[in-house]
Image 1: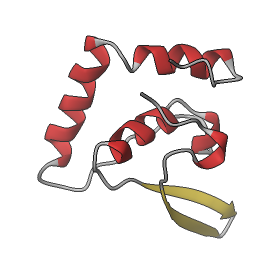
Image 2 (image 1 turned 45 degrees about the vertical axis):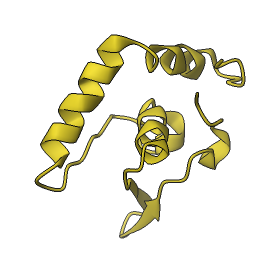
Image 3 (image 1 turned 60 degrees about the horizontal axis):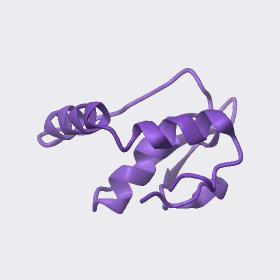
Image 4 (image 1 turned 135 degrees about the vertical axis):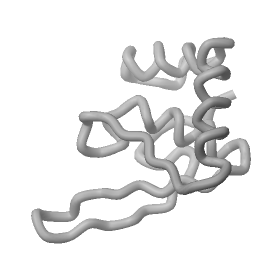
Length: 93
């Protein structure tokens, strides 16, 4: 199902998104986000290089709104609406 990933790390994480453990974590995130704006972060600077890309795909594919905060330069950020498949990420499931 996740053979479209060229990067093995992303492929492995895509497989993980199909597990019960991932679903438990997503449910916890959605519970926290139900009443207030919530951010999930990682040390990777850009979401296209991070496992949160797959989390974003999952959330958007299931009707949730996801926005990325991206550094344009040292003094400017850009807010980008997530779209499934952006940055070359294949749609899941």
